[in-house]
Length: 279
Ligand code: HPA
Image (cartoon, rainbow, N blue to C red; front, side):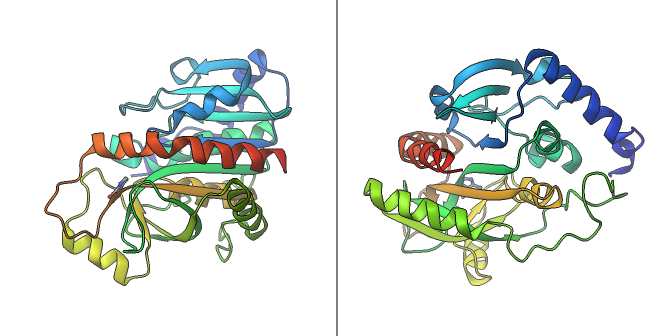
């Protein structure tokens, strides 16, 4: 599955993409942000220096999901240079895992040292409710493909990266203090990554709870693995957009996920903005 993509010289491709970005933007952002489904309004916080549609970026995949606008935004948040992915790539869209993490590698090559990630996730911790924010303190990959499978590019990172603390404790602590000062009730927990695109069955949501998950989603894990490989500090947060474990007979819909994520977005944006200020 990885072989076709690996026929190309990955480093050469990355260099071509980076050169294109540098032809439009000549700063070195040290902070990267990945915005999840329904969470695109964070871009209003950016003093934009350059905006590049994915479609114009050489070797970049193109996002297809509703709620993902598909552009790279380079600019300042609180006077800090940032690169923001408005729209991410998911395995369920048909991309290879290497394509899913391609932008993370681009961010690294642009100079990013700290990565902030957001997503919408289904809650399986029964103390959660729709609209809650959950800081991710660890993750479990449930059958998602590892993006580092295949030949290791030593220039990008080591063959066997340690995953004992993918989510930076210092950033988690800072975010908790920020949330407290803002008066937000913030949860913390384990994110389980699945491939999607179907939502989980009731039995699967229960399984995810039993194996130690607090929330489940279809993104993030692969980006985090690539970012750990690249030696970045990571902070990630989920908006609980729906409850997986529930008494009601309701179905789970993408529309509900998007609207719950949008409703809770201002809180997430406020936390990200203040966290960026402290980096
Ligand atoms: N399951 C998987 N991914 C999700 C969910 C869910 O319930 N909600 C938002 N993303």
